[in-house]
Image (cartoon, rainbow, N blue to C red):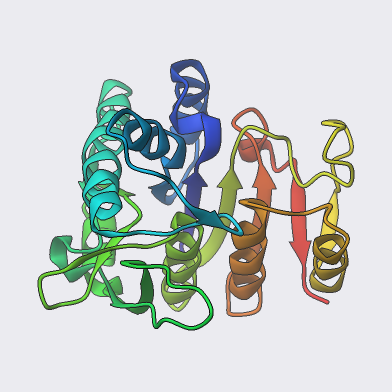
Length: 257
């Protein structure tokens, strides 16, 4: 079975040119098929502030009203996506920038209101793996923004960690899939104040214990939630790491318990 590496990049890595350059340099060394999924939350938050739009987050997930939806569509589908594509082209890697609406790639439904109203946030319903496999077969690298659509003309904001996990799960039927969550830290920390306290391995019960204790919080929660979902649904390996270590296999490896 052919190998497919999916790298989800977020945090400061997509915001700071030096970190992004290091990530893309490392990404180009990966052999086999590959997909890059990106976030860009800080850039969206900064633009929202300049436009006078308040940003609201719950456990690392953005509350998306209509104004915020317009902002994230511009930032994720435009600025960040094309910056990454241009960086790959500069490294002689033929890349194609996509949102979930392009090629009907990722269809979602607007999240139902329960105790929290997330607004125009999308929960993934379907991944068009056929189109992705066609693109990969042409030696083109898909660069996927964290935007989906509902099939009725509405764009939806969907967490990039979730999209990376769902792509990995769907494509694991056709490839041996490795999923890397790449951000500015070297892995999951047992002490949030100590960057050297990287956990070499993490099980789901340990994750839940750390979350309950407040050691793991904010944006790390959706990473790990989706990472464990992937590892339990056919994905061969999930690693949380940074630009300097992901291609070396160093970081926090999620372990089936």
